Image 1: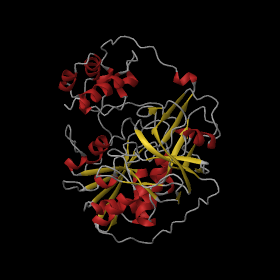
Image 2 (image 1 turned 30 degrees about the vertical axis):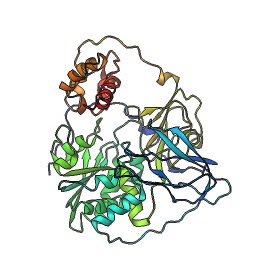
Image 3 (image 1 turned 120 degrees about the vertical axis):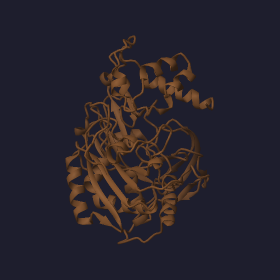
Amino acid sequence: MALNSMTFKNGVHMPEYKELTENSELKIASIPKLVTIPLTQHIGAPSKCLVAKKDEVSVGQLIGQAVGNFSANIHSSVAGVVKDIIDIQTASGKDAKAVVIDTEGFDQDKEYIEKDNVSLSAEEIVAKIKEAGIVGMGGAAFPAHIKYMPTKPVDTVIINGAECEPYITCDDYLLKNKANEILKGLVELTKSVNAKKAVIAIEDNKPKAFDNMTAALEKFGKSKDGISIELVKLETKYPQGDEKRIIDVVLDRQVPSGGLPMDVGAIVSNTSTVYAVYEALYKDKPLYERIVTVTGKEVKNPTNMLVRIGTEFSYAIEEAGGADDISKLISGGPMCGIAQPDTNRPVEKASNCILVLGSDEAKPLEVDACIRCGRCVDVCPVSLLPLYIHKFSLEERFEKAQEFDIMDCIECGSCSYVCPSNRPLVEAIKFGKRQIRQAGK
């Protein structure tokens, strides 16, 4: 395993703003009177609604059943009465049915007893992940049970502890405070694909997380059930958290164009996902709550917050002391996050950050003509030519954009970040990719 080169080609360094929340205590959000739980919190088909108006539901109850492989179970995050089933647009931009639950007067406590050990076959591990409704919690929302049923041999499972986007620190919190639990989840995931190597990769801007994980690994053991476990330190650089960059850095393997990590014998999962797997296997707990970074200079008490799925962003912001100026609200980080039209979108399984920007930060930049400086080319982690892909997308010359490998763009936004003319490069590229997919090409 090539572990000496702990960075990838190109990329950018940028202000992190993690100091707003990286040393905060975890805040447990109170239960809102109403939660709105989308039945689409994953790629693939919406989950089948299993409840009706006026039904009573309990914490952790299955209310949405996965339909087909690329779908995920949905569980109630609260106890209460189903007030309504409505149509919404989710924070991830999807049109979905959602279950509205009135929690007033119901006991919200639910105790899950941790098992000392688990003894599950590979198939049983994957089945419990599916039953718990676990998806990729770094933003992708890919059903985890599908990822851990690879069609090709896998020899290494990697925890992505990079968390390279500015502001976000929810995974950092878990690495610092739940290291042993993460190691347990990692071992079970590695078993599920019959791999023999596991790696935890953490950026070097998280020294306490690295030190705590080092201590936990010494106690846990670097070899467990025939699996060797290694901890590696990555250079802090964006977009280090992209799974293909992680694989390149840690394993010195390059995922081919259009390929998947399993094509080079690897699987990558983000820290929050691995912790959710631990809770599913060791506590029989479905995924109905998560840690979200609620942050921004306008937030009075920015913090990492344990939030029930379905809690409105506005409620989480109030739990963090409120914000005087919400000129722009982003679900996720400033680079890959999605700007929201209002503050009433509900927290989803993939909601890792609620970012509030004030008027000075949200002010649009003046866009100038491209000066062909090539900075976008210098920073592209995939070694593309963003200025030309951007041009062809705007001109709707999509076949030409495909010749320049538009579909390989990971939409990290590094090109837009460094552009001296403030060209909306990544937005144009996203548009081009969407048009190509809709055309079925």
